[in-house]
Image (cartoon, rainbow, N blue to C red; front, side, top):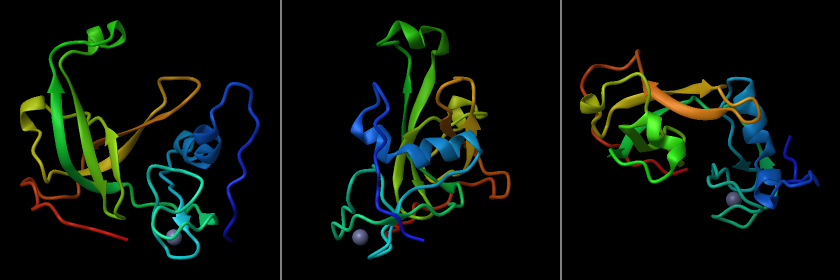
Length: 155
Ligand code: ZN
């Protein structure tokens, strides 16, 4: 069933948080869901009020595979915020989901020198923050050891 976005009027929440509430709620249940345009089928990210392909405003929120490829990454050796000082060195990565969208995230449970573009990854759900669960990725244990060629996908 397609539903139009209906931002909640939570005090302190931004309009984008309201549109993305199903995404954040799904992460708490160890599910990856993104809006899929009811008009054209485009899986949308970043999440917003309308489809970036057709401007449709009704979305389904299908359960996605949680699998994709490491598209790009960088390893930080300097903390630009004190909040990250105890995490050095750490990676910031772009993962392209098999359904098409690209997300900025971290790859966990892998030595930094083993990161390679094309690495098959799967979603893991970080519940360390009691307010908001975070989406991260780990090497996909069902994939082969060698990184796969980067695959262009578009939905
Ligand atoms: Zn659309």
